[in-house]
Length: 212
Image 1 (cartoon, rainbow, N blue to C red):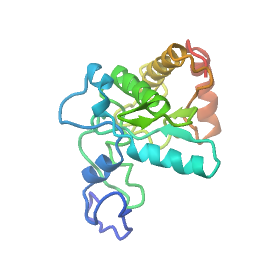
Image 2: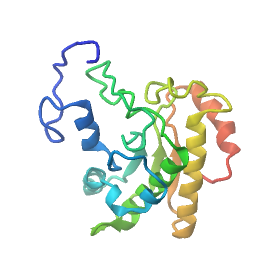
Image 3: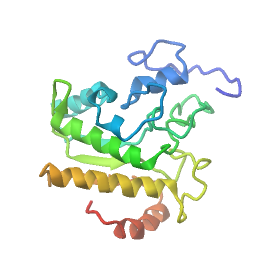
Image 4: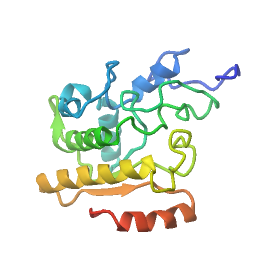
């Protein structure tokens, strides 16, 4: 960990080699490719910037078992993240690293990338066919550590980065749903862990100009 604790919990060998860094772990599961430069809206239209093999493989497994796939977009790719310095405070919660759980550098770019992710999973890209996935969620339990509040101190207030990201992303996803004539697609937010957080979210969501 960052404070010098030795982690004995094994990292999944299917993703990276033993002894891999946090950056290696993040790159192994990122769905948007980091080239070291700031991501622009134009970049989100480039098929080559999307890394979807892992997501597609999980959807395929769920489908093979007869389950309806559900995709939670709740890990910030390093290329899009406001966090640049990895902080490992717990061996068992590697994604609470100040990068994967940080807000996006640009909420509009994230929204466009999220819509690009959904479109490529649904329609297919890079020679891969579309997958039978209809349910998507933006983030998970953001009132907890899954959303790093040091980047977003006004999380529940009027200048919340989280809620700005949510609204722009829902608008982008709703636009894709309309343009693709896919009225069967459904988009959710949060997966809130606490009752109060869920109650606080209701008026915000009701005020947004999109359907779920």
